[in-house]
Image (cartoon, rainbow, N blue to C red; front, top):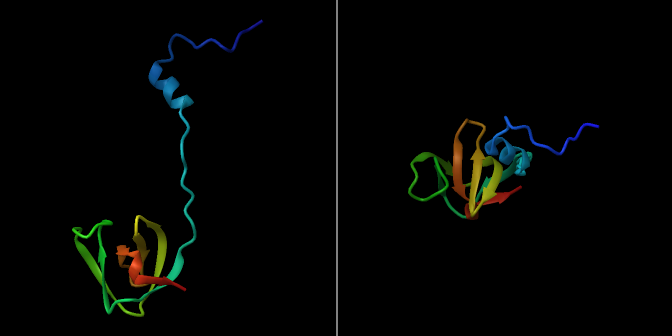
Length: 94
């Protein structure tokens, strides 16, 4: 009878680790519509921090698509193609 509990000698510890470690797969959610509020102008940044380059500016009332919000920063995209991060405190989901 053949035993399947033995690990072949050709398999390395790296391969075993990759097989045994669980992986997390993020399932993207549908973008949510939101509106710029609580400010007259809102900077869109390349990365989710205040020191990151400004890649665009939104105005109060502009509609955006929110992909995700993490640690207060919303990853957004506009119909005009602006994409980046804004502070979540300045948007209101529709």
